[in-house]
Image 1 (cartoon, rainbow, N blue to C red):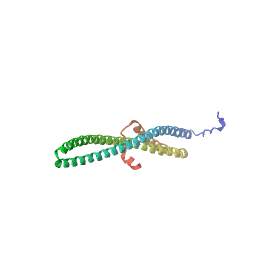
Image 2 (cartoon, one colour):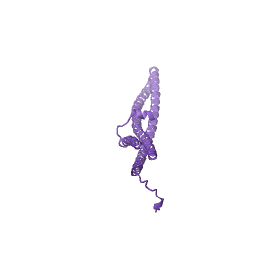
Image 3 (cartoon, rainbow, N blue to C red):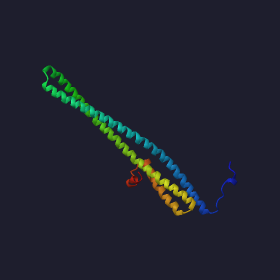
Image 4 (cartoon, rainbow, N blue to C red):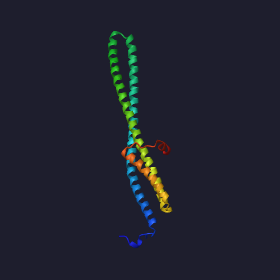
Length: 195
């Protein structure tokens, strides 16, 4: 239990004490809100990294299929050229080979379209997550400025500084809520400025 004589005495100035109370409550609320948005932002960054990694892997798989498809086309062209000058018994074998080439090329063509669509979907997912990450970045920046201004307010006792810090806090809270709730609030010019 604390000894009452160890507590700081009240200043006796009700306005000063009230201002300190406003500052303390504001700092506590902003810090708690920042903690929640930071956790969500970190989760979004992890999801962004996973989406980007998956997109790169999918594009690599797409490229692999494209190369295999191209090799099949070359084999098909070669078999077609050989068939023109082949004896009748070899022509039948080449016909079967051409059918296999056609079948494999159709399969690779289908796989390529699927992989391309999947990779573009992952890129779209990354962009959507990045949009929300920008919201949290703006929130974090505005709330950090607000907390710094509140610290200066505690020292200088300037009420206008308190109100200015609350404007930054309101903007930061709005951006944080937009990120948490997935709202379409995104000042692009400001995002580009800080990124």
